[in-house]
Length: 507
Image 1 (cartoon, rainbow, N blue to C red):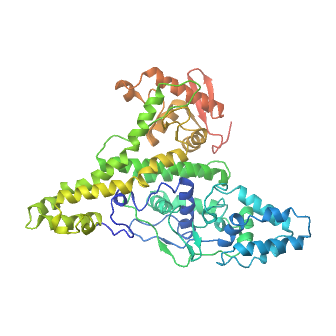
Image 2: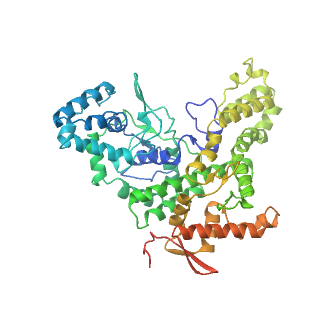
């Protein structure tokens, strides 16, 4: 029996991927939401079994985000050639005018925290400069400070005359699903402990600065349940967990590691999205990304990479159609068709399988007047229409966000990993050093990345590309990694990928 999903007209996407993955919640926002869930479960991090109910009570930190992102006067007041006491007075008057009255009306405590108004203004500037999307045109309540520690974490909010509410636009539950995925990985509890040790230290200087701004934490009124993840286990959950453990084991500050955790989460979430879609559609081939390594001259791999991108972009829509039409292949459907009232029995099945009230499926609203096939057709149409609004855009939005795809120097989007993503791959895959060919093999095995002629052998055999083109693509990657200081060439035929943050460091 499938669980009931709240606040949906019907459930199709939800039973393939979970409730919910969302295109506007890019990987860095998923991580922030994930950390909010983790922060409510620091005593037992990432230990929930698939049957356990996970709850959390997110922080709101309205004072902190108001000071950082709804405070345009601080710079102009700072520049005034007036006494310090007068600066505080003028700024407080301005700030009070825009205060939400949700706990941010009294900011007198700041005068005890900071020795001067200039120090306060410098602290604001420092925290703003490190925030995510500081220059975006998002509402101030949807901007986020860098997660320096537990006091810097808070949920996305809509603040208006009616108060503050979470409208699930940028924190759409993808971070909650990420939490459940890592709970269901074999090494989840081990990862949970490491994340708490590294990211929830209240004593680090930047978290102390954030706490000085915020004061006591402001929490949501009630605890809430996390979203729904349909898979009790999945190989992708374990790969993501292993990747994060590898990144956290590297010899680098946690704030630098966080960038790699975000890219790793994005890549593995894209793979989860495609793998579940292909499984639902009945595809048995593994997911693959044919990647062009961009060079000065146009390569023959570019068109193939564009084709690979388009094929993956179409996967989720095929999955949605297959999920709905698959109900006709069940024994229950066959029995319903043979029953005395086939239309009514098919309508009951559609409701049981997809939580769909078929009374709003037809123009006349008469359940009995719709045949089973007509109900399936209607739901396919509705499900595809809803899917293409947000969930169907996940592959394109997230692959662009993590630097996997690009339209640079081309008319259409294709896979062309940028330097940032390549660094994450090296940091994740390579413990200390690894032969270049072994690195390419591992990138193919873990993430479906096809770059060289060995990994793309099936494409050569299928006459989709010649060996020379993929060999040249391989050479372009080696040259890129040499330029990034991540490959050392020992001879023309022997190169090693080196992780500068490996546990043993450079030799």
